[in-house]
Amino acid sequence: MDELPIGRRVAYWRGRRKMSQQVFADRLGKSKSWVDKVERGVRRLDKFSVVYDIADVLQVDVQLLLGKEVERKPETQNCIDQVEVEEIRAALERYDQMSAFFQAVPHAPPLSEMKKAVSHAWLTYQHAKYGVLARTLPKLLRDAQAADSAYANSDEASTAAHLLGQVYQIASSALRKVGEHELSWLAADRSIAVSQRAGDQLLAGLASYRVGSALLALGRVRPALEVNVNIANRLAPGPERPRGEQLSVYGMLLLNGAMAAARIGDSATVRDLLCGAEQASLELGGDFNHYWTCFGPTNVQLHRVATAVELGDGRTAVETHERIDLAGFHAMLPERRAHHYLDIARGYTQIGDMEKAGEMLLEGDRLAPAEIRCRPLAHEVLSDVLRRTRGTPPAPIAELAEQMGVGV
Image (cartoon, rainbow, N blue to C red):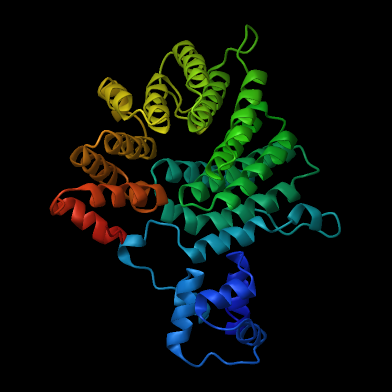
């Protein structure tokens, strides 16, 4: 895209923001005809002030419009920026499997190397190193797609499909964290089809979990609830399949369903789903990371807090938080713990305790900065804390707000 004239870049980003030429012109204070001429290259953009206005309306870095490398600030190194999102999008828009139908498949990396790369990507995500992950995801997606095509007619076909399904899920989770919900849904949906080719019901179940998470982020709450509960019912453990992996995937689907039920205020369904997940965690016998789920009794407790917050019951959330087993909690991976600190910060805001809410945000930031600094939800919570704090906010909170670019 760097080679495109600036007018074409303006048209591209306007389309990405789903603005008509008229809406875009109105927000700029220009005519629709002016916008049309700029996008077609008939009219030159020779004033930097106008380019900056356009970048502001389109909510992009001005360097993107100028076709230059975006300067990354030190404090945003571990977040996913617009350039990286576009690179991930481009990788998701590839259709190697269809191309392979017409011509020879390009060289693909050995599956042994792919397995190591995918495992590293999972760990990078679970340690909330989103910036590091974003810079590796485009190549990982391309390599996994190439491998899936290259090994399609071999004995390794299911292994290659399994790896691609995992990469799609990693991409879906990371994109959802930073607010790219539609792309997150696309990646999760791709994972479902690939997981079916891999012949792994549990991988497909987790892909459904990612779809449910993306739908929930998009505000499609009832479909999110339905997909989680329906697939959980099909994967319910029984005498013939009591494996730890089965219990973990089943339990995570129930927990995700509980989050969706909480979003619509269905406390009875929340209670039932949490009880089902708790029973699965007790059968599992501890906290494990089967299929990268981090499922177990501790994660069930964290979801009890999260669902209480979604129901607007901050008091219950705080009380549940205070009863969490600390040994189990500290054994969990950084992303999960920092996510919980963000949830309980919301709980404290619901009961009006801005000081504790701020402390929880700082705890999350110390543990996994990207989970706090990169997530739009965390920005909203911090803004709420600042707005409702009487007098001058504590210095650490003020510093965090400055680093995140959050004002009152």
